[in-house]
Image (cartoon, rainbow, N blue to C red; front, side, top):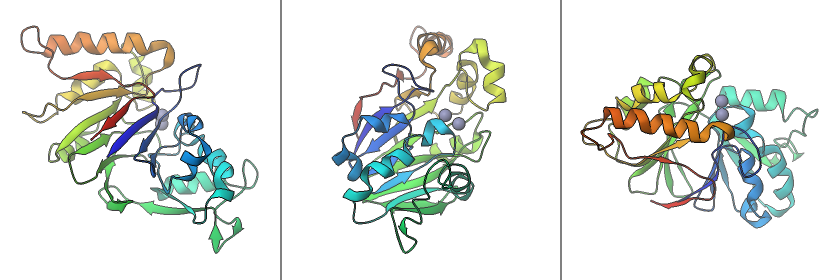
Length: 263
Ligand SMILES: [Zn+2]
Ligand SMILES: [Zn+2]
């Protein structure tokens, strides 16, 4: 299974795109602005979209992508999300004001997109991949995902703050890599708390819940373009302090758009 990072920034700027991952060629996890780097053929090859939540940085490219590929596809694009996320998309984006309701166009019986509600804890098989819906704690209903093609899981937290239920679950899983958000620097940790994101300080607490003996690589995502260097420096600083001797306690890396992982 291949995971390609299309976008992993908290917002946009030159060379910074918001959250989106392409798993193999046919499953998209979140539809942030990174989707705009795909060719029309690549976009048309996507059969399933898994959304973590309704925030714009995770759904911004979905309406435009559907429009771009509608006449190239014979079957509806399958969009999977919490019912609350689907309701928000229908009410605020696909409402025939901001954008056409592509779940009823060209006809309700044969639309360009079809929404599917999912729940935390549910498992799905999509395009030969096993997907588990993970809990997330955010300002709106939100989830994370674990995806596997039969081997170890690629785990993505989505946007979340302190999330004990996530650790409880993934400590039971064979994890190949974890992608976890750290949206704010320590300077803005109060804002991080209010907006239910992690700061390096909060991340340190979260990583204390990684099961003993688990040493999968941990990739940091959702950093603000102007603060990425600072956030990574703060994370490295705490990780050295918590490690044994001079060795860091976790294998923490910086996720970058364009990276591709073979799992
Ligand atoms: Zn969010
Ligand atoms: Zn976000």
